[in-house]
Length: 422
Ligand code: EPU
Image (cartoon, rainbow, N blue to C red; front, side):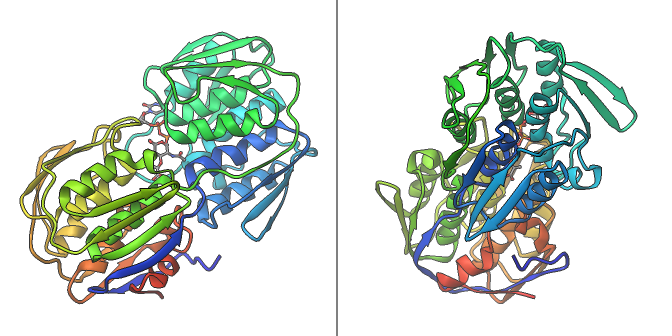
């Protein structure tokens, strides 16, 4: 990993992308799966785990909890036998939202846990009430103590839990917590995102009894213990989407391997409507773009299988160079239009309708500028816009992008982009 805090990307726009990419393992599947490793005292091997800052921080947090982890050739060798912690390292936990995903596995393993409000990108308020309500429903006691929240699961009981919103993290926490909880736990209105299914598949490969992941109701029969496993999380659907949008911006033809095309169905439909050509064969998506783009009219984010919020900033950026108007609505997070002022520095024409909706008026060209990544996906959208823009784009705060992309500049360079890290 060659990431440093004050890195920048320098991009000379105008180069087409050609070639093939083997897409990185999913960030949002790898992180909860790593946390769920606390649930077994046997050896676990996780394969094709992305080399990204969030994974690095998760490794540090787990090590502080006494977990042994060796990272070799993209694989993690994990042994939680000696795990002993019950208090998350506050400084590390504040670096990312997924530290919260440790709550379910820590509580299951140690019966008590203390956490601080988790960190992560500033894309919305991101409260944790759904996690807390769901755990309370399972008879976990919760005590607030200033910045710290203490949990006591010594009297926990399996039950039916209905989530107020289909929160990905809360669903993943309850799945982890109840895998070893005696009796039957039912999650109603769970998140249906593919990463939830990946977590359930991982736990089932260790002997858990989880059914219904990916549907409206998940049932978990607690088992006595979980054994070791060798597991490969799916390819990252958002990294796949990022490459697709990069080609839609820059032009060219790229074959993306290790993808699950149906997970990107909404994006693929939109890209075709905008003028890209898509071919699908098994786990390979081939995208080519040879002519200019036209607006798709409307993009609205929603829970899976709707259009993912994690691709919204990138599609908003792409709409900036599609002829016509595009109405973009963000329905998951309150603050995911952070990158608009940066895109405007590059010549984008965007009108805010209200907090959750903007209208993009397509322009012919963007111009390179000095811009700042303010969150992970918004940062990626600036890099992609830079591939298209005339002149040089400098994207500072690369550390936001490094949280979720495994050396994005290397992936793009291999495809012919002119991008370097300084
Ligand atoms: N929410 C609450 N209360 C809660 C939990 C969530 O009100 O207790 C709200 C959130 O504020 C948000 C909505 O529910 O408005 C959905 O949040 P969710 O809990 O589903 O998101 P998350 O688990 O915090 C994960 C991904 C995000 C992704 C979202 C939605 C990980 C590590 N993070 O976050 O990924 O945007 O699901 O799909 O899995 C990213 O990769 O860039 C990223 C932000």
